Length: 429
Image (cartoon, rainbow, N blue to C red; front, side, top):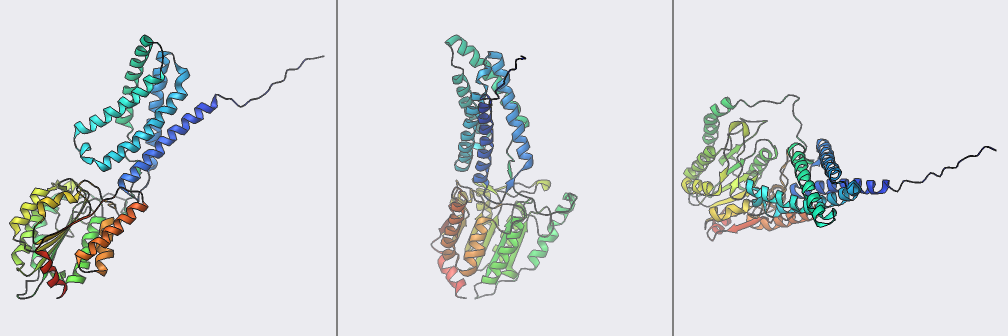
């Protein structure tokens, strides 16, 4: 009789650690995505290119672990090491992006970024060395090999496969061909554009409380700032009749000569033009919207080489302009850091965020930033008094940020002792 052999097919137990390791890698991607959403706010989308880069970065790191473990003869630790390392990376991603939101000043210098990165690498190396538990001499040798290989691998991964654009904001619809800005023509047009706006300013009427307005959008590659300039100007005209006494400045790649550039020179001139016309009984309403850092407001037109505005420079411009009583609204991240410099007894200063906090909603194609929508489009439309509109807007901002799980931006308002009487005259006109 011919003998036969029976074979029993079993599910390979060795596959389970590999699947767990893969799940840990995916977890690190999800944590990175969630952290970037929390830092930049809603409205963006998952970047396909970012996913591809994340896969490549993870592959490089795993390859480094394979090389290191092969050199020390501990390939049996590969699945466990991959799992624990990527779980740790997920936790670090959330922690480091939270630190970016809460203490962005740490990331503003190369030394600060290097310190944070080195501490992160040290924690990861400590985990890898701990997993190599062995007699002391072997442990030290194996740990040194793993540390060197790991640092080399991380350097390659960070240098060539950064996942900073894992979460991106969609670009507004544009033509198929990228339009190159004629920088020479742009600068040649500035005097004419400013002269046309200044010539259109209606004069101050003696004995009447008039409102002069300035609306400035500072960043050229996101259309929301240009849109806010136009939307806010319309709202101020509807409430205060400021339309014929309004100057608009905006940096815009798509519409570079619709208005004068939002440059420091144009801003200083616009303020002086308003100051020269504003009477003692009149009010100036100044609105600036853009990106920002602590004590810095972005006036970014990359092709034109513009320079950002510091809080001290803005203070000096206001002091030199001759502008009298004013409402000043600065809508930008960290805009509260301008308050110490520009607050005055005859000014109401409103900012979209506290000095150490970010604001949200700066994206191409949007109608409003989050603060702009809450303050101007919702609160001020129904309540012409900015002092009363502000708490309504601040509550609306807090509600939206809570729903989206964002760190509160904490809008600020500082009222000078002398501005109330001027606002009351405007509102009872």
